[in-house]
Each structure stands twice: as C-alpha cells, then as structure tokens.
Length: 193
Image 1: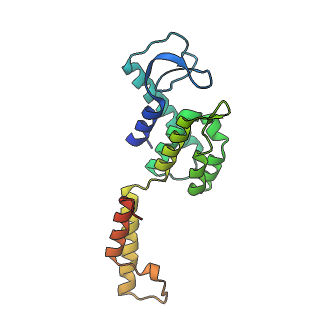
Image 2: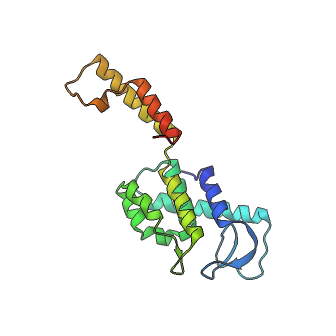
Image 3: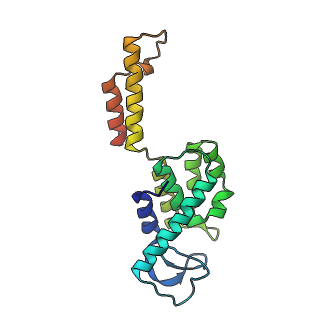
C-alpha cells in the first residue's frame, strides 16, 4: 500500500519546508520536510527538489515499516495516517507502542485515541504536535467513500433479501430500505451523522 495525497499533505504541512538545516525541538539537525540522519548537520543547504526527493525516500521507508509491523488489513486512510505518524516518531517508537498492539488486535477505536498521547517532545507538550496528532487521528478515523458505499450496498442487499425472503428476526435495524441506506451514507459523507 502507498500513502495517499492527504497523508503527504499532512507531512508537508506539519513538518514544513526548510531549505537550510536547523535543530528541531529536541536538538536534532533537520532539513527539508523534517529529514534527519547522519548526513544532516550544520550549515547544510538543499534545493526544494532535494527536499522532495528525500521526502519520497523517507515516506517509502516508513511505508515498508508499517507493512512489516501491522498484521491486520488497514484502509488507505489508516495506512496514510500511520505513515505520517511514524515519519515523525520513528519506526522504533511505533514498534513498541500501545497503538501498534491495539491496531494488531483490530481495536481501531482504541488505537485512534493513542495518537493524542504522542504530543510531547523533550517531555513538553507542544501545540504543533497536539494539532498534528489530532489531524492524524482524524485521517485514521476517516471513512473512505468506497467503504461507505460498500456498507450501504451490503445493508440494502440484506434488506432486499429480507423483503423477498422474510426471516424470523424482527430486528428493525436489519429492515433498512435501499433509500434509508443511501441517506445514511450521504449523511456520513457530509458529516451529519
């Protein structure tokens, strides 16, 4: 799987673009879109293209880390949010995290809450990290249109089969009409339900 455009934009937004090396909040030499490493030090200057190339290289590295560490299926948005998160905290920290344990148990709601715990650098809460974690959590929880449509079609198919083949169950939630399913999907897409 590959990070989606929303994930790339989150990284760019929260890392920012710096063409000259600088020390980050915990004193690590950084350049470009939050790139660090043994090759980054004082007085380094990169072009914007060098920064984009390194961003792509780093993203690919973290995509592989997510694929290696996560043992359950993820949506594109979940995967992208995790790549953005791991881009910032590192694969080692993610590997030992409660978040990963919850994801691998398919406890996605519990895992989403874990994003918000990672808002400190050097033991201090940083507003920028708090905003970043909320944005990553929001992307992680964001349902994709294809998933919503599949859910609506499945629900309406089940409802139609109940109309043509009545079952003993009188559970009203299983008697949705196709129109009701479509209305639910549209409300969720518009953030109204």
